[in-house]
Image (tube, rainbow, N blue to C red; front, side, top):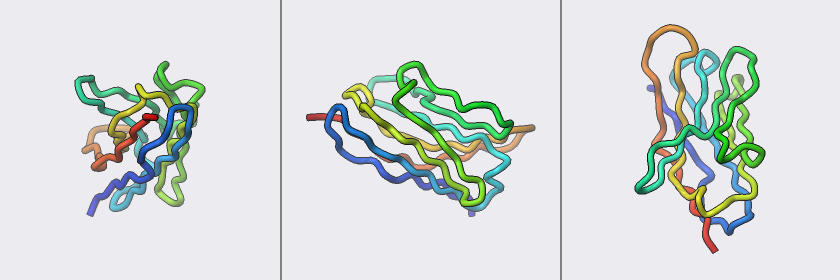
Length: 119
């Protein structure tokens, strides 16, 4: 059974930090690009960070560059999104996606974890 489970969300004050985790199971994680998206009410879905399988450096949205860091551990089938200097505009539900690196095939998504940045 394919599963992607995000965790680590919560309420944090502006300027604070959170670490989100994504645990994958039921498929060959190392063959999939990992993407973190976020969705806030009234806004379009935003691709925040991605980490491929081709050895290239991770990519980030301009809105989070230098504040967020994505990593992956293929042995553990996990991905982590470290978030620092959080702003109220970072408030959203964050989703972990696994997208096939090559060829066609289904993508997988978790149920998301809520991040709220507020004083």
